[in-house]
Image (cartoon, rainbow over all chains, first blue to last red; front, side, top):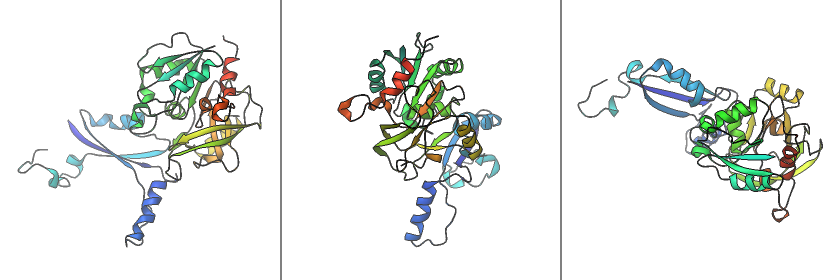
Length: 93
Length: 221
């Protein structure tokens, strides 16, 4: 079983009012100069065959007409990234 | 004409759709797990929040067993109307072009809108006249019609834009004021506003009845 993360975001050029709302809210809190904010979705899955994830994305997880997606395998691509989330003493992959 | 109204878990406008259809013909419910359409002549995919609208509106309903039958029915020329969430489901299923995005205001809006009939040759609008105004309520959060510009050009050229929001009524930010579209053959129509809520003078307008009447008067093959 492989842990997979699918990041889904609005396609470039499609109006993203959620991203705009967040972008407008940041300066009010003193965070100036932030641009190109986009709000997307994260889907985490344990899959038996990671090679089939793109197929899942095209069929269900994303709508390719309006969204683009990227697939990450946190355990393989960035093994230390999630160290903080592992149970104490655990170092299993 | 016998209408079949699809009910998914989370559908909420099925009863109004049944009542609207029964004003012009017979109508019965189809359950999401059904594997046949039990001899109906026209399918209505009504509004609501099928499967909680999880992931994306309509994304999961599209894979319901009954939708395989609806797709087959539609591809053989069967009459299908998608209303609101039903429109989202038909777009997700690829039976209609485009997609529905969150309203530009990000707000749920419920209001009476004025629609302009653009194509009166579809199975669901032939009782209307081109340019006619229909007063019909709309109520949704995810109703901004989107398709890439070249696709929008094709839709306009091919008569697939069926209804537009009249000037000042495009509250959700839909591309080119599009409120409803059809497939190339004109047997499948989808729209965000709710014609089934505009069939009784009690609620202010009976303009929605024209869509059901249009389908009821199509000669049954």
